[in-house]
Amino acid sequence: MQRRPAIPSPDGSEPRPPEQRTRDSGPAPNAGEGAAPGSSPDRPNRAYSIFFFEGWVGVAPTVINLTTMLGELGSQVTIYGTRNPYQAPPSMGENARVLYLRRPEDFPGGRFVFRMLRRLRLGSALPGIELLVFACQCWIASAFTRAGCSVRMGPSIGVDTMGSIVAMFRRMATGKRYAYLSFEFRDVDRTRLLSWFVNPLERAAYRRADFVVIQDRDRLRTLERYLRFEHPNVIFLPNAPRASAGRRTAPAEANFLRRRLSIDAAEFPVIVLSAGMIDPEVFSEEAASAFESVGHGAALVYHERRKRTDGDPFIVALKEANRRNLFLSLDPVSLDEVDLVYASATIGLAFYRESDASHTNVSMASGKIGQYLMHGKPLLVNRTESLGRFIDRTRVGVAVTDPTDGREIDTAVGELLANYATYSANARAYYEREMDFDRNAQRVIDALAKL
Image (tube, rainbow, N blue to C red):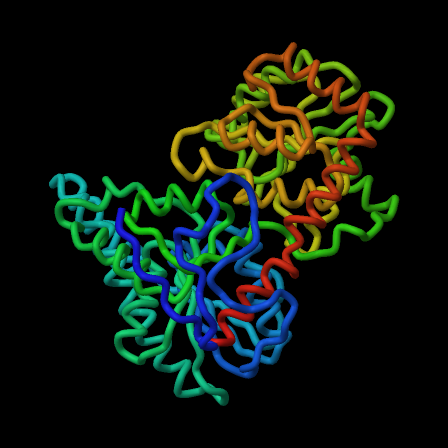
C-alpha cells in the first residue's frame, strides 16, 4: 500500500504524517485538518457543491447536517444527486437545494438499452455509463449554478466513487479543491472489463482529495485496502444525528409508535425497535421469527425508511413468521419527525449480516445506532467483529451470538431490562462524548473553510 507524503495544511501549519496515526479501533481525535474544534470558519458566504450520485439525501443524516451547518454560516450548498425511491430530505435552510439528476435508465430508451447490454453480457459497461452520464449532467447543472450564484464558488465534497470522481473532474477544470466523503464500500469487481477505468479514477480521486471524511478507523482501514493508499489527512465523523443528547423527551413523544401501530401498553410494555431498512441484510425475517418466543412483554417493531405495502412479498413473509408480537411501520416519517420514532422505543435493535465490507464495519456508520444512543436506548446487536468490539468497549448494550436464536435474544432482553438505567446512561454518555455531530462536524467545516 502506498502512502502520499503529508501535504501542508491550507493554513500553513505542520500536518500530521500518516505513520503517526494510531491504528486502534473506534473513534479518536481527528487528524490532518489542523483546526481546533469549535473554531469559526474564516471564509463564510461561499457556494459549496456536494456530488452524491446515489442521491438518498433524505436518509443520509451526515449530508443533511453538514449542509444545514454550512447554510447556517451563510454559505450556499447545492447537492447533485440522482433520482431514488427514498423520501426527500427535510428543509435544510434557504441556502440549500438538491438537484435530482437522471440516471441513464431514466432517459427515453435507457431501460431498453440497459436490458440489451445485460442480455448481450455487456453489463460491465453499466457503471462506466452511469459515471459519464452523471458527470455530464453535473457539469451542465453546475454551470447554471455558477451563472446564477451571487457568492464566490467554494470547494466541493465528493461522496464515494462517483461523487469523488466528479469532484476531481471539477478540480481539474476549475481548480476548486474537494474532500472525499466515504459512506459505502463499492464492489471493485463490478467495475472491470468495459468499466475498467472507474477503479483507477476513484483511486486518483481519493489520492488528490485534500482530506478524507470517514466514520472510524475500522472503515478507514478497509477503504485504504480497497484504494491501495493511506491518505495523510483524515477526519473521523460518525454518522450520527445532530440534536443534543441532553434534551428531554415529552411523554407524548414516547407514545408515538404505540398510537401509530395500536400497541397495547399493558400487553407489550417493552418496544424493541429495528429502524431503517427491512431486508434480509439485517436478518429481518429470522429476527421476526425468533422474537415470537421472546417474553418480557416485548413487541418487535420494524420501522421502514422507505414506503412499503402490505402486499410486498417480503412483508407477507414477515407476517407469516411472527403473528404474536411483530408490528410493522411501513410509512416512513420525515426527518423532522424521526425523533418521535426513536423516543418511542425501549431498546434499539441493530442486526447486520456480514455480507460486505459496509455491513462488516458498521458500528459508527449506522445512522440508527447514533439515534438509539442519542435517545438513551440500550442496544441489542449481533456479535459481528465490529459490533461486538463496540459493545464490549462501550457497554451500551448486549451482543447476541446468534440473531436467529429466540432463547438467546430473550436472555439478552432480560439483561437489558434488569440493568436498564445503567445501559441507558452509558448510551447517552457515549453519544455526548464521541458521537455528538455538531462537535465532530466542526472539524470538517473548519477544514472546508481553509480550502
